[in-house]
Length: 433
Image (cartoon, rainbow, N blue to C red; front, top):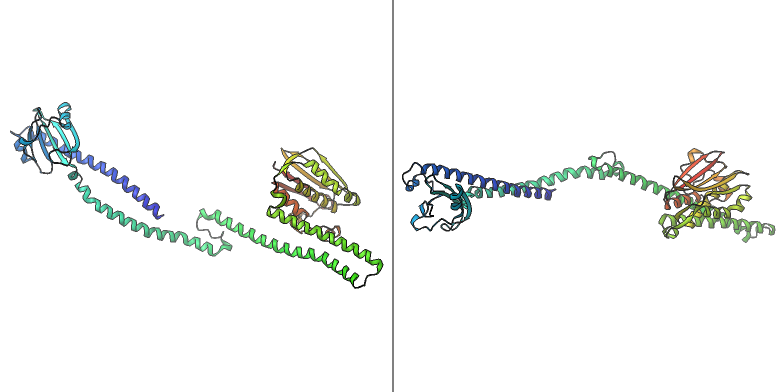
């Protein structure tokens, strides 16, 4: 602010000096010309040019030149010793047009002089002159005062800038001391977007911290359950508490819990890679045919669907987008897997692929148990389960839909959910490409 003020002041001074210098010079020239016209009137009423001494104020130089260029009168020198003036530009101009003026270094006086000449009725030329230094003497005398005032203004600008800066920054410092309620007391309307952004960042940071804490707790719980089962069965076998007929059963349960544990770890690692942009996410995207990918995912789950008595159907039209085939297949797999797990015996799962309004879409519909409205906003969170007992029974990790959400985000796609309890669920993923 200070330097802006100084720059503005200097610019103002330069422009003002230039304007007033020109105005002052013009005024001085007008005064000299007026003085010359007054002397011209005097010349008509005197008997000889020597009488001009009575009207000469001593500040201006007065000269009278004949048509031949001879100096007839000179107020500041001996007229008889002066050279012929017929070559002076202002004299030539006066003889030709009646008046003439010029500014140059005087051959007689040796410094820059302003000349004004006019033709007298008798045919001679009267010339008045003043050296430039004398013209601007008053102006030059005022210059130190101008500099002094400028310095005073500069000092005052420094003081005022410091005071103004403190007064401007103080409310902002007060905002910084109360970041929790930064959006409640915003001193300047220009800072409101900043305050709201900080508040939003704080809320997001708090939510992320809560999510991390909840995620850690959920991971610990999810890992503890199968490990406890594995440890319990293994201990019974080790201590000889299991009968020979039970060992095979216990081994099967250990194998089942180990598979569940491996699935859980694989899903956690996959989410970690998606969060950090690693693995396939950073790989170059390629043309991916969604109908073919959906059929591949459905073929993997076909046996599981038949075991559960669920009809799994894929239909639609070939639709190509730029994406990661492996991640897209995993996304469709998780959607179909969930639709099978939470379906009813004899139910249906339909995967529809196509385009709507020039956007590629994948829609997975089921006739399952549905999702209550109060749970719909949270089902894409990690480890969130609507029916925990059913999730445990079906071997779910609670991470399938979280993976779906992250894959969709990495493909710049939007997820829409429609669901009614006991009627079924529809999850539609729309790609921008």
